[in-house]
Image (cartoon, rainbow, N blue to C red; front, side, top):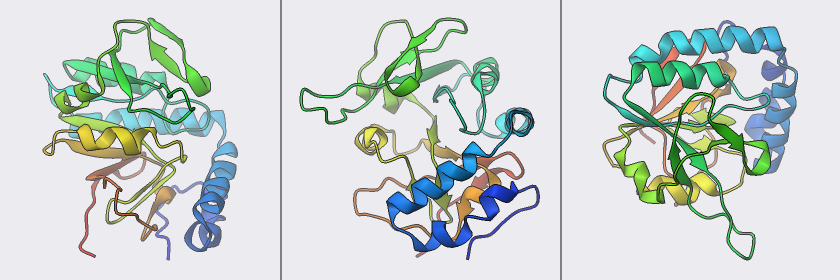
Length: 215
């Protein structure tokens, strides 16, 4: 069963059966529907809570690969600004596709507050020089968007495939941190051989959670 923590948003809790029993597409639809029910006030409170936990996630001098939260994702630009205050360097992803429309590994660019431009899929991206996909290996911490993550570190993303193609380029010693709401940490999600598992989850209510329980 899904483990629901104190402070879980009711709309998320209502999706338990679908998230655990449905196909990947059904899980995504259920989680996205629940996320759309989160109010601006709830999201602001979540952002403040997530910011308060960042001292446990990064150290001064770290290079961190992160992303700019959009729409109903947990966090806001304030989360990335706080991250930049705490560590040495923040890189954000730049999406691109091949001639056939297939996703390619993410490029990266250094984040400077106020220096963002519109990217694909409604994302905000830095306007500075693009770094190659291998820049991911410079990061000691990688914050990864997710719709849910399980106790073993299996992540459910939006299905675009960009992170599936990018995460194999990480340093093996880096922390991979899925940023989710408390109710989106579940007992088990379906996994595939190519999945790169998260080492941690970061939630508003519980902070940094170590993942990777044995099979």
